[in-house]
Image 1 (cartoon, each protein chain N blue to C red):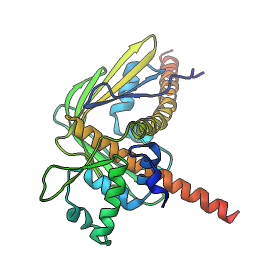
Image 2 (image 1 turned 180 degrees about the vertical axis):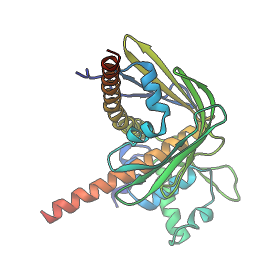
Image 3 (image 1 turned 180 degrees about the horizontal axis):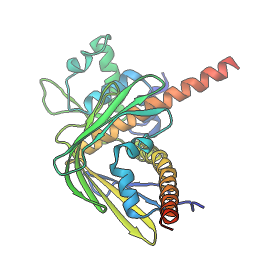
Length: 170
Length: 126
């Protein structure tokens, strides 16, 4: 019986960072595996329905690289992230750089790659994962927010278009 | 045009400004760094005055500002107005949550199969 866990939380802890927190009803080594084995990662790191992950390559060791790419099944648009692992401490902590690859979606942020720190903490069978993304500056973080916002708006307007089409046809 | 009545930086002005794909493309370009009007007009098939009109709407919504360089008058992205930023947070959260719910299912499956294989191992030992 899976007990419902609290939903993901997103906060802006300071001017440069975005932090995502979520708890999972599973032991830490298992959550760590699901986070670091490509064949497992590509089964869940898919975002909203309608996206697939055709590229998921991860060489999880210090200095190793990862390459993630998503594709919209609806219109074929693509974007991705790539980076290098800086710290790998199973099953408690991973630090990697992260660069946005705009693909056909566009957007991005100025300056250096973001630094992503993922920590895994277990308490009585529940593992809490905290992902903190440090963009290096307020400008870069706000640009990333604006990219996400315009991308998201694009998606919302597309849905709205669909809805209006259906209304017109009905 | 009813546009004039929208208060600068209001949610209305923000949503109106974001309701056009050219303006969204301009914002995506400015996310990479400031740019002059002619640089912004380059990728579009529309005229510079048309781009200027879009820029005025974005400026009124508080989404962009004009930089200090008096020659180029570069436009740059402003921190998104608060309401839009919290809309983004919610959207970003929903994207992660969609993945995490899939991960809940995967972790459950992994636990089921690992306890099943433990049982199988015990059986073969006997």
